[in-house]
Image (cartoon, rainbow, N blue to C red; front, side, top):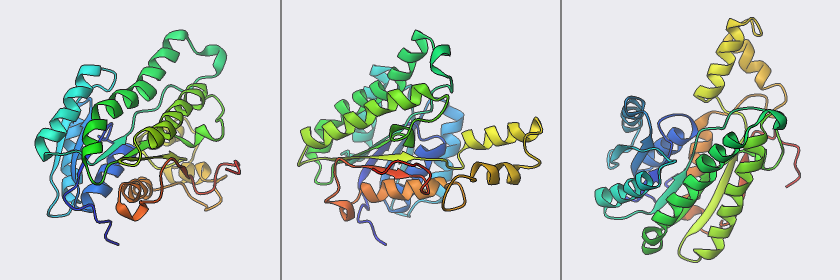
Length: 265
């Protein structure tokens, strides 16, 4: 299916690995020009090479290292995208997960750090990108949050509470930037990202799982479709929401979890 985003310009934050990288890869595969972002320059460079290897021939993919908790760095990241491609049509925001902790063990500093990383990074990026997105004929924002927005996950109080602010922001942007810009969110459940791979491998080392495959199977135990997600399944959904094929979708938060969550809505 042709998503009709060839030669569009996209910025994907926190895209040196995981779901952000999968989103960049899906956009580039459809012919979009993509700026990828991460803090670690070496890891970002490797991710750019991988995305380029799977990109359409017409797509240009570049990397720009930036810390998403630094307001000036975010301004430079958005400016670089516009300088490279002459426009900004699609913004995809992503960020690493906060530490897993129960409420009574979480410090004030960890609360502030999580808010800065998960919410203020999106606030600042969207604010810097908004004028360019409004100038585009294709302007979209897709925020990658978590299914924990709909159903709280044990010992993930920071994600449960703080990521809800991202979805509230996305809904607000879908109204305030309309009709020029559409804003949507995706709420990933369990996917085979490097973070999950590390947790499973640690379980193998400690004897919790007999093998990596056994660990992955156990992680999929409560998922109705019978497996955990491939990051590209989320990435392709992000590309769809960035495309004119989803032109009547705005202000929605789409769970991508294989039916794992028990929420009705």
